[in-house]
Image (cartoon, rainbow, N blue to C red; front, side, top):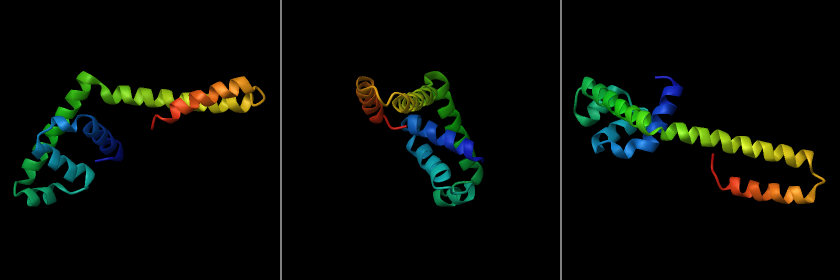
Length: 119
């Protein structure tokens, strides 16, 4: 599994993990968050390695299915890019128009609003 896949799965889990069963969430956390191998998870849960693999595939498919319908991760990433671009634009305007006090005040107000958004 590569890093991009792991990051994507963890994002999907953050948004939709509550929709998985307790057992699926447990296996998912062991594999993607705790970096346990399929064999280690199988030993821990007293099931076969193939059983773990199948459950993880089913969980991943469920998470992907939720995303294809709801697109929460896609919308989050789009909003994240917009906020970062806005913050960058404000910094640029502040630097270019440092002598304009009225504009500086408005920009600080906008920056304050955007500052409350963690990205």
